[in-house]
Length: 339
Ligand code: SAH
Ligand code: SF4
Image 1 (tube, rainbow, N blue to C red):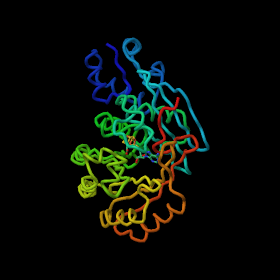
Image 2: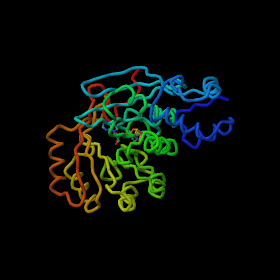
Image 3: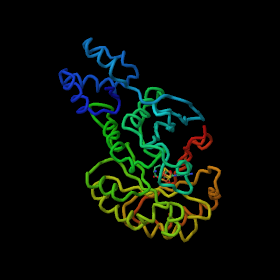
Image 4: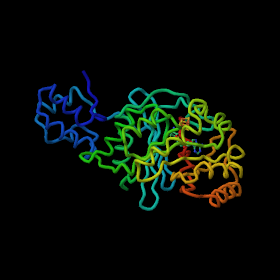
């Protein structure tokens, strides 16, 4: 039997120790080395008895990813990792003033098939394990000196189609005995898998949730996000009142602004009507070009859109988010395997 320790929770490590005839507290030591100290080599562990070290050396491994390529442009670094199954995933580190945001992947490829998204065009390959998700963070934590302040699940894949692994990985990031990143600093972005959004709300999970809306009418959303046929716009907006009752900050909706698709004055008016007095947060993200038929609107069209929104803004907050790292294809939605 071979055990991959990275990704295991404290309880799983405790069960492993008990099964192997070691005292339970040994699991706490290993947990501390794996996450708080973020070791990459088993030999760094120096407070375990020799027979336990031998067991770990022979029957366990800790790393799940290998760095394949690194691409840097000013304060943004894109990492390409290879998994043990020879799949490739990407993660991004972005530093701005005292904010260090990391964008991590949840799947290899994505089955949701949004028409404008580079990852969607790859198709779906596999779900990442808890270890593969947490290792993206641990690698960046060990390589980039600036402390990580924000973690967003906005890399490759649909986090809510790999719900259990994503939530377990978020718990590992959040655990006070381990990495201890506040739940306020962890954001999960979903294309709108309603049963999983409901489960998230029902389980009273405190991480920030963002839903990619990207259209103001179902006809347009059906076209650019085929998943809309299953869970249309109304079903997504319906989630916000339940969510907002339980969270300090409102549910976030992302709106990728695409030239002549969803950037008309009518769209801006409909958007402000949809969010009126909902207490939600609306993030406008100008489209990052990926060489398909979709384009970023001109700055005049972007300004016109945000001005109409600002004028009609009532009872929701608005943010225009310019992606970092577009020069190295590390902006939102630009992550795909070009290698
Ligand atoms: N699958 C999840 C999370 C990954 S995508 C989701 O769809 O929410 C993260 C965000 O990037 C989403 O809001 C998505 O709409 C957006 N996105 C995808 N392609 C983009 C592009 N080319 N330019 C800008 N944003 C894009
Ligand atoms: Fe998947 Fe998100 Fe891309 Fe849609 S936008 S294909 S859900 S990664």
